[in-house]
Amino acid sequence: MAFCSPHSTTSLSSPCTTIPNSGFRQNQVILFTTRSSRRSNTRHGARTFQVSCAVEQPIVIGLAADSGCGKSTFMRRLTSVFGGAAEPPKGGNPDSNTLISDTTTVICLDDYHSLDRTGRKEKGVTALDPKANDFDLMYEQVKAIKEGKAIEKPIYNHVTGLLDPAELIQPPKIFVIEGLHPMYDERVRELLDFSIYLDISNEVKFAWKIQRDMAERGHSLESIKASIEARKPDFDAFIDPQKQYADAVIEVLPTQLIPDDNEGKVLRVKLIMKEGIKFFNPVYLFDEGSTINWIPCGRKLTCSYPGIKFSYGPDTYFGQEVSVLEMDGQFDRLDELIYVESHLSNLSTKFYGEVTQQMLKHADFPGSNNGTGLFQTIVGLKIRDLYEQIIAERAGVPAEAAKV
Ligand SMILES: Nc1ncnc2c1ncn2[C@@H]1O[C@H](COP(=O)(O)OP(=O)(O)OP(=O)(O)O)[C@@H](O)[C@H]1O
Ligand SMILES: O=C(CO)[C@H](O)[C@H](O)COP(=O)(O)O
View 1 (tube, protein in one colour):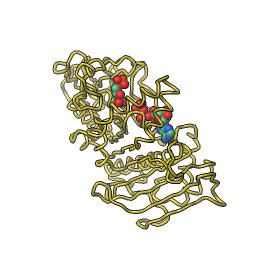
View 2 (cartoon, protein in one colour; view 1 turned 120 degrees about the vertical axis):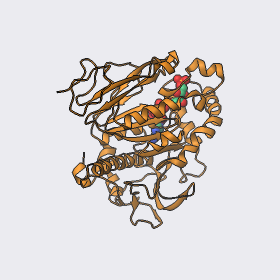
View 3 (cartoon, rainbow, N blue to C red; view 1 turned 45 degrees about the vertical axis):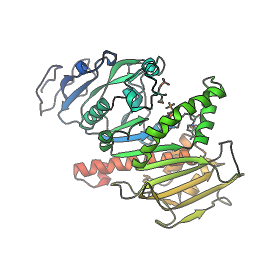
View 4 (cartoon, protein in one colour; view 1 turned 90 degrees about the vertical axis):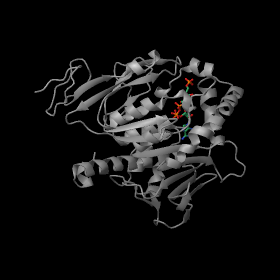
């Protein structure tokens, strides 16, 4: 059996053993290419490892949204679809932003901030500004992972506001990059097998921020307002435009069921799904391609005021053909969701009722009683399906044979 050593420069085709104490898996040959020389010393030597042997080539998913818009919640739902719990890297930095499960590794793109909190303040730029982020390194490392190579990714520490020493990330089956800029850089965008944008309207964002930052972080109403206002120009310039590139957009708006509602508690949520994406068939209600309005409240679905309304139909989004599924209102009883599920098609479930089961399992997550939770769960199932189809195509077998 071949043996890999840290300074090996040969690529071996035969299986190789794990480097002792390195954390590397079996069947990987590692060629260390230290790139710390071109990094500032605050980077603590981010490195790219070349790996050969029979390693997996991950599929790469991008999830874009502003801070506090539900990315972590979405990631927890996605991981759960694959059946595992996600945890930070074992024995690593307690402030790591990475979450690893059996199938997925989720990294936070804040780790590619090139300026720490003080640096941003000195230069007068926000974290949303591309000038505060290292897109070359982001591209290099996402590409390396996609090629099945391990990386040493920097860590941005949200507690201290500093750039911490890098952490080792192995290529998983599914690699998710979540954060402010997954679709900003064209090179990174090209590496994505699927992309999602969480588009939270200003009114709703404000309501969620108040809820979290006042209740959990002790911020004042004025400081929350000021922070949203301060971010807005850069959000509009650099974050929001990414939604045109997303394969699926979850748009969250105030309800239309309550006139002049400004509480932001009842939500109208749209799932905008691009047509013509390989391995992604948009979900539909009743009849594919028709325009449908459906009020399911009545004998089979309990609805208190203001009720629930679904809509579905074709549309265009940034000049591209899309299907849009919309839910306005909220569920009173989550177990009754099965009634709605039975009227939706192309859900990519493995058994009847899987959407309802997932939603019930995470009834305590934010948004479980409305379209945010429902559509996040559906997109999670579509990603599982996409993964299985890509793996099947690579292996030249029918998709059924690659089911996880
Ligand atoms: N679907 C939802 N319905 C209601 N509130 C929500 C929903 N999703 C998120 N929130 C609110 O927003 C907060 C942030 O959610 P989450 O941690 O998932 O977002 P995030 O984008 O990962 O945030 P950050 O980038 O700041 O870590 C939650 O604590 C909750 O208050
Ligand atoms: O928009 C953000 C991404 O989640 C953060 O504001 C950004 O990462 C800066 O972090 P900090 O709040 O620690 O200065």
